[in-house]
Every structure is written in structure tokens, then in C-alpha cells.
Length: 74
Image 1 (cartoon, helix red, strand yellow):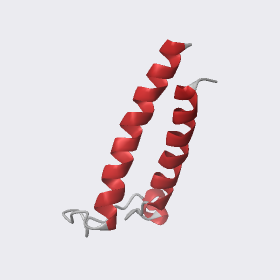
Image 2 (image 1 turned 45 degrees about the vertical axis):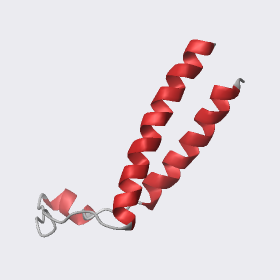
Image 3 (image 1 turned 180 degrees about the horizontal axis):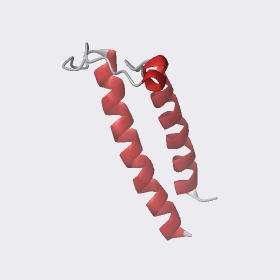
């Protein structure tokens, strides 16, 4: 394993944690009943939600980039 592989491993773990920490406004019961509540449709993410959303986007881009670097270096 080279250095890029270790970075991919760490970024993958950070990505899993970031996605797991995010909350969802969707309800599982609505998925089975076909209903969709638009109560919070226009609400903006603020505070921790905004940070987690941006953090996840940055980590995912870094993850994809490092996977490409890792493949090219093998």
C-alpha cells in the first residue's frame, strides 16, 4: 500500500461518519404510503447541518480524487 491508499482509507471513514451524522426530514412510513410532506420544503440548512453538508461534499470530492491518484500510481 502506498501513501495514497492510506489517505483513501481515512477519507472513506470520514465520509461514512459524516453521512451517518446527517439527519433526514423524510419519514419511512411516507415511502411506503406514497405520501410526501412538503412542510419543510423551503427550509435552509443552518449551523451544524450546513457544516455537515459542506464537509460531506468536500470529503467526497477529495475521496474521488484520491482514488483516481491511487489507481494511477499502481
